[in-house]
Amino acid sequence: MERAEQTETVINARDLGVVACTRCLQVWPAEVKTCGRCGHQLVQRDTKSLQRVWAWWIMGLICYIPANIYPMLQTRTLFFVQEDTIVGGAIELIHYGSIGVALIILLASVAIPIGKFMAIAFLAISVRRPSAVSKTQRQMLYEVVEYIGRWSMIDIFVVAILSSLVQLKVLVAINPGLASLFFALSVIFTMLSAQAFDSRMIWDAQQGRGQEPE
Image 1 (cartoon, rainbow, N blue to C red):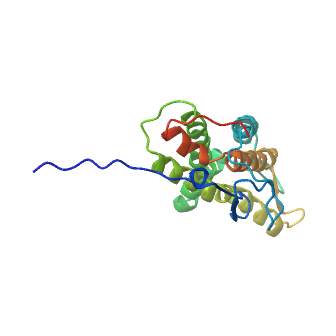
Image 2: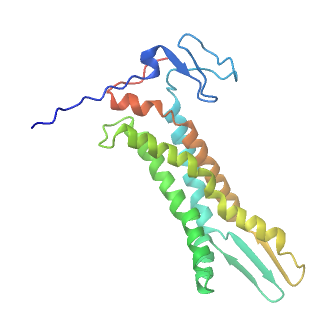
């Protein structure tokens, strides 16, 4: 017995003659230009979205390089000063038996940021070129990138807590290194890059539509 093929038909807001506010998600008729709830400008598609995505993405990548080169943490004691990078600090934790903490830092400070860079770049390219990944999977990827963005700051939180707690004047002191600034900027820029992406273009690309002028 043959199985009948089902054609997936997607009806979006533009087909229904409505537009959703990207800030508060309130839905309005297509002719409305300003959201009556939050005052945000309403557009069917943000035609300059990809320009902002790539601009923030490049800035985030530029900041991520020195974030891994310069020391993240500086430990001063009575006799010596020790400076550790992100990876170096994780290796030091493993050496002292704190494998779980080291793995969390490597995941949050290395694996997740690199994964975010790759995911955002893939999403931006996929709306311009044909992709074998379905629209549903790409939408899910976009939501995951937005959700995990804030957790990339865990390394900064650890440095801030240690810096505030371990201040014993001459005996020992822990201070944030230069890498903490670049890492925080990198996280912020990648979050802005993800937020600048207009996910509605995913569905347009899947249906073979181009971006229409506003």
